[in-house]
Length: 390
Image 1 (cartoon, one colour):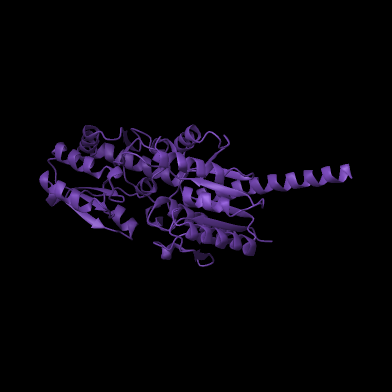
Image 2: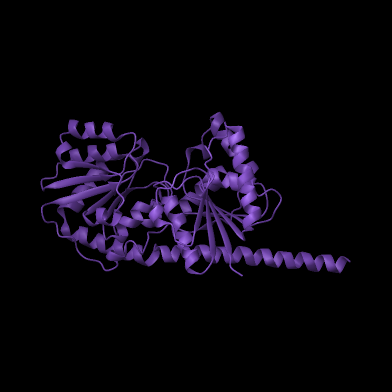
């Protein structure tokens, strides 16, 4: 009998959690398992990444508890799907999906895996809304047979610190790059500098991504050699940061590319990758992809970044919001080709040996097996107990 896996996610947007979920789904289908994805909302930014044998259903939920009728309709539809599919495992991604997936379980004992992808502010903040979110989360996940995966030790510790009722045995499984899509980089090759150094960042253009700090750092670095800075992504700060680049006198060297769908080609044009995030990170998937592409990285020490990037080996891990540190790291890698090559080789080797999608998917399937094995054992013990009392 095939293992039936039901993934639940708020939306399939352009983010690391969404891509990681799709890689897990692909890994499970490659083992012959029956996989279904329930999208609470209506978005699917990665239709090309959906495995052929995976059924995706959108519930068109508004993802706001203020619309009570809408919330209750989503709850009922999800509960009906549970009854129709009879999954062996429910695997939710991101907190809104974790809460809804747990509420819809009602009294059944289907194992539910909650995937913790980030270090959200509401877990620690003292305002009323944050306290209410923590209350709703605890109320939703109070039932038995709920298990947790975190994308890094730092994410695990942060969550346990602020949600102390979560069991301490949270499994850590790092996010991974797609080893099929990035197969062209399987063999490391040195990047010719050619017409100059090209640096790059891929991110949503929102304040906490810190790209304005990176622009200021590049202006302060005053790199003598020819260089360009490519930014892949879109968001609310695009125009603001474009004007900032002009004000800093580097507008002619900065390219805002908008949404990029061919990420391997993007990474293939770079010599250095920069991730200047200020906060709210789990394990940034773009960092894993950049390393797998053979790039040395400069990344701020937020979330689980330090578990991926080894400072001084794969690149530089620097404090968040430290413009001087970004400038110093950029100058080191831009001017010293020997260090740049050594770190690029190290980053590539680490990504392909530790952070491939095949490896991640197998770890998730192994975790499912442990959960189902424990459930089966408990059921047998219950049966034995009942028969002995009778």
